[in-house]
Length: 298
Image (cartoon, rainbow, N blue to C red; front, side, top):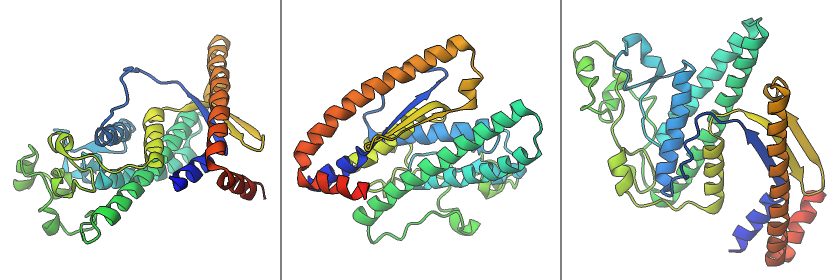
C-alpha cells in the first residue's frame, strides 16, 4: 500500500491535459475485461498500420507472395502481437522519414509528419504493453522458454501457424510463403500472455494488472491513433507548458473557438480534481510524500 501511495504521489507531480478531435465515436464504454481492452487496442493499431499502407492483414484474400514482409501474422492482443505491431510501426517510421525528405507539397508534408507522430505513439505504447507482459511472464511463468519467434526458421514456425486458416491451402500449393499465414491462438500461455482468439480470450482468467499499468493502458486506448491538437502540461512547481499543433492553427476561427473552450474547460476541471487528489494523497502519504516532493525540487 505504501508503494502504491508513493507511486501515485510521484505521478501527481505532473498534470497533462490533451484535446483530440476524434472521428466516428461509438460512445461505447471502455471494456471492463482488461484482456478485451488490450485486444481492441491492438486491433486499433493494426487498422491504422493497414490504413497507412504499411501493413496488410493476414485475412486479406488478395495477399500475394510479395506482401509477405507486410503481413501482420499475430492477430491478438498479447506480447507477440504488440511486438509485431511495434516492429511494423518502426518500419513505417523509416519509410515516412524518407518520404518526408522528398516531399515538397506543404499539405502533403503536414499529413506525413502527422502520420509519423502517430506511428511513433503506436510504437512507444506497444513497447509499454510488451513491458507489462514481460513482468507477467517473469512472475507467473519464470521457467518458460517461450519467446517471440519472428527470427525462427520456417520449419520451426510451422508449429505456431493456424493450419485452419483459408490461406493455409495456398501455402501448401506454393502460392504463398509461410510468412503470409497467421499464427493460431496461444491458449497455452494464457496465464501470463494475451495472444488469444475471442473464444479463449473470454474464457481466460484476468491478469494481475497494477493500477499504474491500467492507467497507461486506459490512456493509450482513449487517445488511440487520433492526433492531439492541444496539450497543456502543468508541473507541481507551477510551470505550465502549452503545445499547439498546425492542425489547430489551420482550423476555421469558429471551430478553433469551440476546441479552445473545450480545452480550457478540461484544464479547469482537471486542476480542481488534481488539487483534491493531491491533498488526499498528501494526507495519506505524510512524510513519504514530502520526501518525494523535496527530491524533485532539488
